[in-house]
Image 1: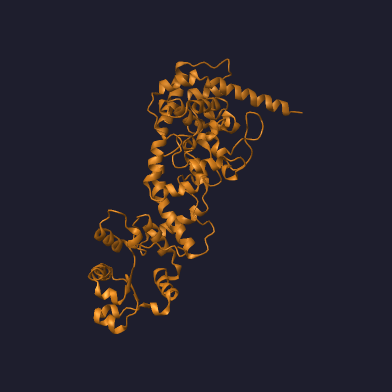
Image 2: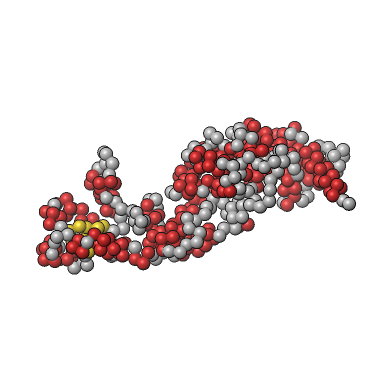
Length: 431
């Protein structure tokens, strides 16, 4: 165990009902080495001779050492009579003691603690079959590993997690990081391609987490990062398999739960200290006492120093919240997020980055509250923004229906309320 070597041994690798021959053949086929204890009893048993044929065939086909012989109470002449090629192999001897045998085997199995060999063995433990170590694929993995050690949220990568060892020093640590990188390259690619995000229904998120080797284990080990990517899983009844990990984040004062933006303080409804960390707020009965505006902004736009929640802005999030696709959210949270979006002006400012010339944006930014009217032209401009947001979020609802829901939710007056608040605050600061 200390050497991190996975061993296939029939007495603890077989389950009731398994086919002996099939499982043993599978073990011989998948194992990188076969330790063969050559003893007087070995020579007498036809079953042992039959098992040896597999590793012998692999040595001939793969042209590399597979069989690691250990002599137990036999001499060179005994082995020579059985198999001259086997007698030609350097063997460990039980006469030297168990520890000496183990040292010889480990020296062969883990030469100089080669990180690539270790990485290959770890991947094999997840039933992942990587290319040969000589393949340049490993160079890509090693190069990407350095990014994962020190990720940057500005790179916009999602579904990446901390490596097992940030400050790698030994061969095993480097190998474990390489293996983690190789696993993450696959699932992060699909996670972004499928856009697994805060708008993805929980059952689809769970399917994704359990489909990729190592992903569920990694997510369980780093629940705060999981909560950053998919906050919906922190909601009770959506948290299957992560209940304990999320409950531990709920403990007041848990620094691991302070993730969002990683700087500054947050607003609360009573101006007091929050009742839980920001990353786990949607799990708390009162949402940790954070204001609806904070909760709404975070649900789509949160990030830490290294990891980013989603590619959605506040307007795209609003379009999703007002569509029928968001109905799986608990209604209390959904209403709170809509109310929180109304309390700030992000939903107006965010689409300005890509749509500077738009009748709706032009009207709401240039007209006063009394001057603003939802004319046909302004509605059309808002519908154009909604159509763009629909493409990015995958919403199927008609743009006209969402425009009407924006009107019904009184979002425009919310924008003007925020502008009035900003002006009042600035005027009070003047000497």
